[in-house]
Length: 546
Image (cartoon, rainbow, N blue to C red):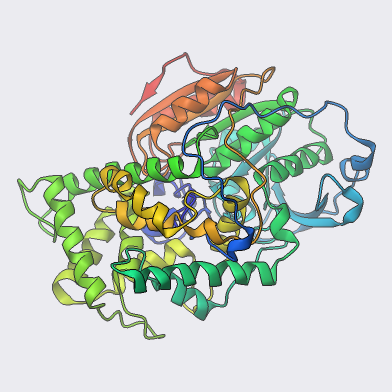
């Protein structure tokens, strides 16, 4: 999201996963992510205040994303006509290539950006439909990694039989000229920074952290930062469509990937094939409204977790009869203790578990109810045994930090894309203070921290190029928008809004918990989406699954 927390899809339940070991929380990595998984995503960061926009609109927009001309400009012909040199890569059957796109679409001659592409050809039997591009969200989740670790081998066999499964890492992400910002040690300091400041000193420390993060991004990736917008990534997808030889783009996007896909539909409505947008974002909302809505989404997910937790004997936050609100107060009290005195974790680098990392660990588990047992265990160890290792592991997984202290590019790309796409949610600490009541009302547990986390883009070194807007995509075929009623990262209201904005949007509702719905255990959801992908037949209006 437009703070330190991501929108990417969690990995699906084990019944739909390839048979290999992976931790429950890795379900939140898109492999964004984006996650995604996305689970996903990372702290949106800052930089010098001279570069940030002072616009912080808080309402939805009336502007509509305009379609691009149908004819391809002659200046872009070399990109649309390029031939990819495919080579074997990763597991058996996967091929990889590098595609070129203009760094600046307004000045194509000014240089290229090289994008990592991967595919796994349709296996048959049955007539090949075309390519199916997948994106797990983030922003910042590696689509190539997601394809190779899940989609290319874990999507339904019938879908993989009829489609070439394809992914491209968006510009600035993972293998596609990744944005770089800070070292692993610097990132440790950043992620441990207190995001619930109690006084001016702590507020200053938080602002300094945002500035250092942003300054690092500006220093290491000065040119790229201006050209990692979602609009540019969507235009790159159209080049890929043409290079693959497809007349229309077939696409499954999750979480932030829905914003990317909807943007493509708005720009190129006549080139939309079968498009699934799972865990939808609402492009008409400001960064502040998106963040506040997501804060409420995390609270909704936490309420579900709380009800489930007290039914188990190992719940450290309460027992039978304890209300969800009281569970929240108990967790908040624990966070305050950690703020005053972090606890040991046994980490090789000497990190302790403070309020910031503990909060991230809890939020990470909200993306997928399959992680709730792990969260209960981690909370029990931290609250009763003063052992923060479990919550630290959840936080590290969420931020994509490996055991050697190295961070993936997720957090850097997440900030770069989000801060370019929309004006900052807040411009100053004073604005955050004024906005706190709204966030705290949205979530008594997470509101304070998520409000302050929304300050990051205020210090970004590059001015935003985007504004909130509606997407109608007039002329596109049916677009399937999927929403989960208790989704923590992309609230259900966003799916309803996007489906209503799209001239051909069809809403499919999953009544349940967790982030995104496809491939997460609902036979109703999976069969409906599979039928649409294979036959082009969308569900009846108003269909709901559980």
